[in-house]
Length: 305
Image 1 (cartoon, rainbow, N blue to C red):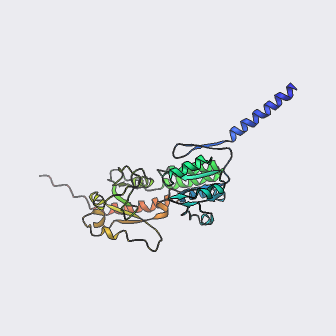
Image 2 (image 1 turned 180 degrees about the horizontal axis):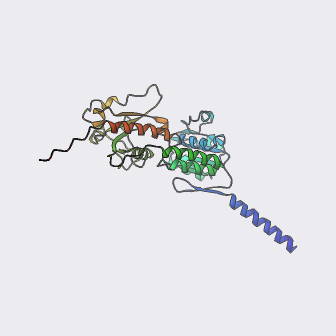
Image 3 (image 1 turned 90 degrees about the vertical axis):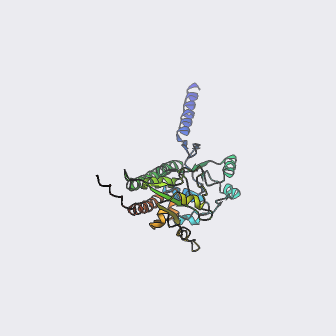
C-alpha cells in the first residue's frame, strides 16, 4: 500500500509539474502579466493592427471576432464584428466564448476592458510605441497562440527590413515635420506615438513631439509657428477624402509650402502598428529624403580680409 501511495504521489507530482510547465505567461504592453493554461484557440481582436499581427503569426484561423475596420488580410473581412472604435459589443463578444481577447491599450474604452476582465476573460493589451516593439509583439502573440515558429519567422522578416531602413544622416539637422492625422479639428501626434519613432529613424523631427497627449489637437497658428520643412498626412481610398493640402497653400512663408514638400503616406500602413508599418516607414523615409534634398544650399563662408 505504501508503495502504491508513493507511486500515486509521484504521478500526481509529475502531472502538477507538467501543468505548471505548460502554462503560458507573457507580459502585455501595459505591464500586465497574461497567463494561459494552453495556447489560445478562440481569439477576439479589438483593433485592426491586432488582427494583422495575429494573422502574421499564423493564428488567423483562431480569430472568432474582430472590430470594425479589420480588413487585412482579406480573410479578416469574413470574421464577425464585435463593435467599433468607440464601443465593444460585450454581449456578442462573450457569446463567442474566447479564451483570449487582444485589445488596444489606447484605442479601446478602458471601462469596457475592465468589464471584460471582471467577466473572467483573459485580456492582452497591445500598444507598440517603437518599430522594435512590433517584432516583440509578434513573438508574444506567437507564444499565446501556440504559433511560435511562424511568429519568429514574421518577426525576423520585419527586423530584416527594419535594418535596411535609411538611417538619419549624422551631422545633418533633422527635417522638421508636421504630421497631420486629422484636418478639422487639426490634429497631430506626439513623440509617444510610434509614428514619431518612424520619423526619428528617417532623420525627421516631429515639431509637436513634446506634447503631453498622444494625439493632440493644435491650432493652425501654432502649426504655422513651428515652420515645418515637411507636411505629412495619411492617404486613404475613400472617394470623399478631403484635400488636405489646400488649406496650407496660402501660407507661402512656411518652408514646407514654399518648397512644395507635401507627403501622402498610405493610411493603413502608417496608422496600424502592425507588420505593414515597415512599408509605411519606407514610404515616409523617401519623403524625408526628398525634403532634405530641397534644402537651400548653405551660403559659402565670407572671404577673409
